[in-house]
Length: 209
Figure 1 (cartoon, rainbow, N blue to C red):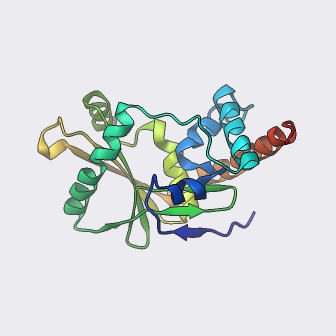
Figure 2: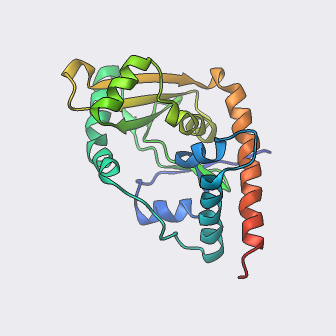
Figure 3: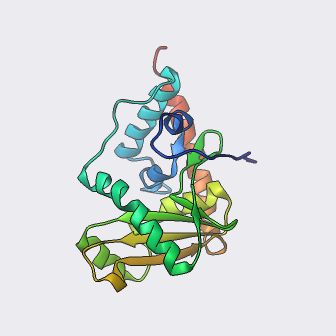
């Protein structure tokens, strides 16, 4: 399926950003739909399908939105991590905005030049330590990374793990994923996402409106 992508230069978590994401499958939730691949969608995925179905029917944001102290801390510390990243790579990170791809979309934490995007995770010390030992991206965010590359059609994504509790030299960990190395995952995502959209549409058909 040929997808026309439109990029919107808007700030995350604004009313306009919420409106653009309404009823769309977003990269931050791809782990829900890729779990159990290639078998049937699990309960979390079906709950997500219902949420998006209701947003499409009512044309308004779902009230079932979750936030916790870790998410709030992440929003507060993200600018610090971005600044450290810019200093480390002698580069400038510009607004990630929103990539609108029709029934799905994506909001990376920033754009780098014409080829890259970034995903910043401000994490607690134990998680950061695991990221350090692992030597690669946190598997929990694999599909979000794939989604960033897929929706933006850029060549790479830097996964950034930041923890202020660590010594200065190891507060920031960066692992890069390249589009050329993710061709199988990109195909898997495309097929699974289309099936999930069909589940959303089937859910809509079952709800009187």
